[in-house]
Image (tube, rainbow over all chains, first blue to last red; front, side, top):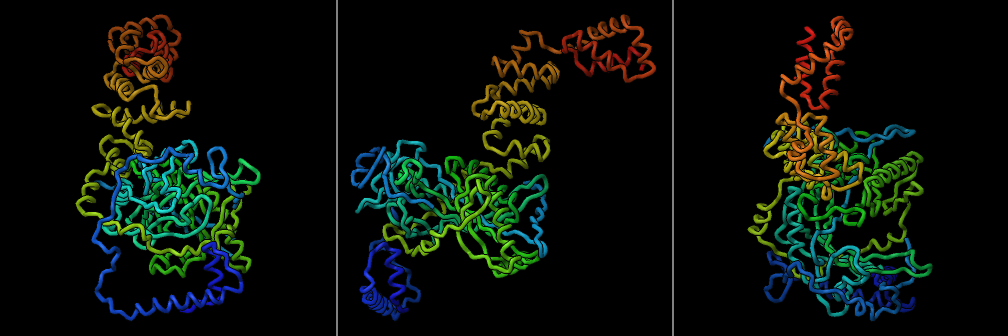
Length: 95
Length: 503
């Protein structure tokens, strides 16, 4: 798989990261080097090996269905650039 | 268990300029899980709270916060799966669906794309007595809901409330087995009914507890059968997805409008483009949500914050053992146990609370009579006054008392209606009311006979006419009923009048 400039532009846009036009070819190259490295892993024979999802054999931690959090409107909104009447206020987004 | 047999309904056909077209529909229903707290945080799920008051730092996606799964939400999804006769996956996993929107602070939704908790199931969609469509459910997965954006509070700003952010949703995905707008609405009705029986979703569509995305395509007659034989989608037309429908009426309208749009395109020699569309009920049209197109690249990947969800078969078995009786089984039982029609059984089992109310009325009494009174008198009156069964002024015990008095012959059906009215407006125990207000039916034939004889003696001309035309006996019956204030047993009066007139 090879990443071209167009794909790099698209990935940057989807991730909402601003990349100058002049920097796109280098970014695409970076992607290609990373993918190339990952490709090497394909050489390992993993026939019959279970995917490892955690380094320690743990069961997913569960929580009881109880209300233990919330009621902190001020704290939740405290980092917002703009908040009004208990809401986050953001530039208008309409479909 | 006795089964009610059924035939599948005929698919909806739309005639175009170049011939007939059929519809193929699949639904993705988002059902909010009934739980106290959210899927991955301890914040409340309560509807209608002060904005941003039910928000934990996990929901607001503050850096360093980690999700911890609510075990009850998992149980609810398993219960739903079992209620839809579906396969339960003992190992499932969570993935991130990445997109940006102001009401999604994480920048991704935690969902289950690759390994959903529930696999294939089915829903029997009722379309009337003896007609039903068995719709296959492809999967159910657990995911987080997004927050709510409000666009009409300020001309330049949108306001965001994260109270709903992170509330557990079940996405219930059907196969494209639905063949018309009415079937699609009936599917949602039936799914809602089952979820409410199970107690896994309150089904409140107005509050957004249930929303549907509808996939619609059109094909020529015969093509759908080829798809069903081969499960090869190439026999079907290109589909469009209509997002976020929250009323049965709009679902039907949108499907009809969208199918006609697609037919017009195809008959014009154009192509249907696979895309996401919105239904505008004011204009009666669907329109493309172009902004969604690029965002459709969701770059799913396994959520690194969550281990796979492993559950035990014994736990699943316990949940299965605790399942309530579901609508189909209840309907069959009502028909067999109470001897009512399938239609009446459908009405009574439509909602779990109505069914429970009816059973309280009917237990130990005449089931058919109880069904009549619950459906015709009680439901009729509730509907007229726009009330729910939960705040019915007449309790199941009171209505049961009325039914019992009719069965015993203490009151006639007509007097029973007056009694119902009294209980509805004033309350009280029906048996006591009948005693106190002298509403008891006269079954004493001696007393009725005296009355009949008196009326015959006073109206010789009517007697002569009745002998020529026996239908006029009804006049005498009416006079007796009037004289006794409606309390005489009508059947006894009929018999005695006929005998005394020598008819």
